[in-house]
Structure formats: C-alpha cells, structure tokens
Length: 135
Image 1 (spheres, rainbow, N blue to C red):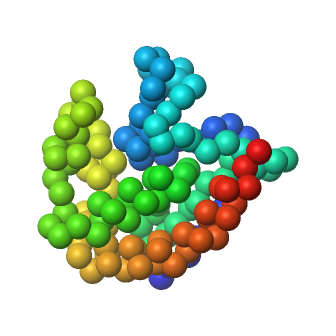
Image 2 (tube, rainbow, N blue to C red):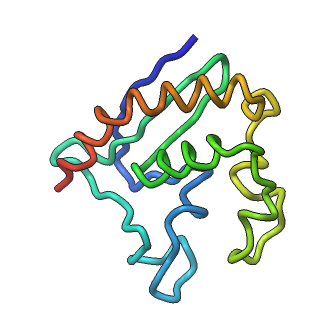
C-alpha cells in the first residue's frame, strides 16, 4: 500500500536526511547554521514549513525538501545500492548514522526500492508546487 500527505510544521523541520543533504555553509554546527547548500526551504505563507510524509508498503519516509526527495530517489535507484561508507566520504561520522543505514532492511530490497522510487517520482510534482510557493 502507498500513501502520502503534506503537513505543515511551525518550526523548520529536520528529517533523518536533512543533515546529509543540506550542508551547513557558515562554519556553524548544523543546528546553528543559517546558510545551507542546497538551501533549505522556507515556510509557505501563513501555514509553516511543508513536510512530505510517505508510506510505501509499511515503510514510513519523511522529506523536508525536494533535495531530500531527489537524493532518496537517486540513491535508491542505484544498482547495486551503495554502501553507507561510500556516501559518507565528506562527513566526519560513522556509517551507522547515515540515513541509508537507518532504513529498515525491507526498504532496501530491489522490489521495495522500485515501488518506492516509482511512487515518489509520481508524487514529486505536488510537493514541488508547495515548496516553490514558499514565502
């Protein structure tokens, strides 16, 4: 089963992917940084920060930006699936802290990845339309 919904948070959202996708540029720790590459999205006027919640066959996913969604699709589309160590080259952290290693085993199967990637590509446009209306 597949489903998704977009919710709005009152504070800037952080998912398990945020640290790995949005790099702090201003020399501060991630939690104190104000500039990121790629930039983190801002709030949608009067509503808050849009967050995409997705469920694919019992696996819950949270995306706080298009960059996170696109990174997930890119990584999960690869065959073979890369090791967390390969994705950690520029980060001073152990492989068990990477978002890929935090996913349940089921999410890493080829069948699940194909289903999830196809679904995420299909729903991307709706999330993009909201994120692009920020401010």
